[in-house]
Length: 177
Image 1 (spheres, rainbow, N blue to C red):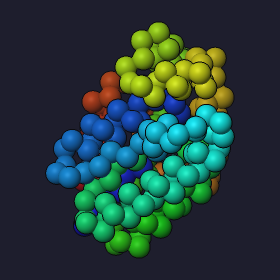
Image 2: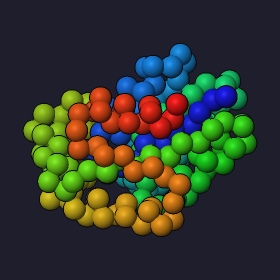
Image 3: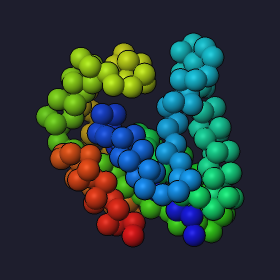
């Protein structure tokens, strides 16, 4: 049975890194980064909202194909609202795949340090873009924006992401197995 594993969290919490690390453990698994799709769209900066919505539609087409072919999917995405979460869950259900939802829980100071480090030494192309959108001073707001998920998504598992990515991967792996 294929699995959809959503790794939600604030920008800088490590969700894309963790999704990638998890995907390397499973043959033909896909680490899906919706922001990479968005940033690949021509002129996305002219209307980031429209580009983001279109990227999500494209991502759902990838999700559909990945699950149709019975391969695992790891999605690292910052989702404070539930629409896309529900779409992923619906796709999993449609394809008789299991759905696992995680939210990376990180302290404000730790997130601010990660965002600062990312702004000083971006390690991936999307970091340069994201550095224009969020700064270390946004850490508290970003973390608070996810708090509503504790009520709206009670089945989500909150994972301590204050340590190294390998620790987060181990915690998620233990929950998904």
